[in-house]
Image 1: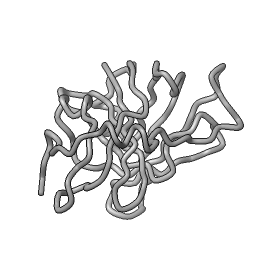
Image 2: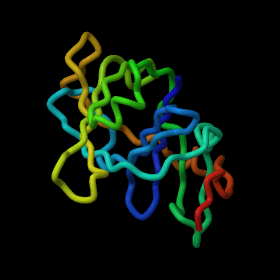
Image 3: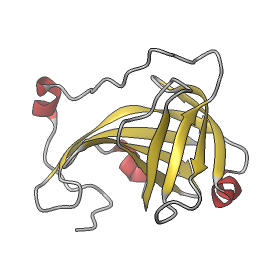
Length: 158
């Protein structure tokens, strides 16, 4: 199965974390971005599922459309988990990422009793890939932005 993280410059910069589960991309918006430091517990707000083809999307979502602004792939790769559907329903998904930036074990843990039931924490597991001095680095440069074209993503919900 695959994963993708989109750097999304909408109203506020955030990172969309997506895991391929049950034929869709299960998706979470992470305001501060993912971390390779287990001490960082990142809020991950579950959002609507996205079609698999959205995993390849890069472009500028036009003004007037949901999520307007530049979107580019920040990281992608393979992910592995035992029975991810059941684990999500139970509120705790443990998995391994094999990306260019994100590697090793992670957990998504539902924050019970808070908000609408969509608030999760993304936490890096203790392993050889830990980076205690981790800082998320934006990929969108002026040169990359010039290469992006305006397009409507395959999950348009305007």
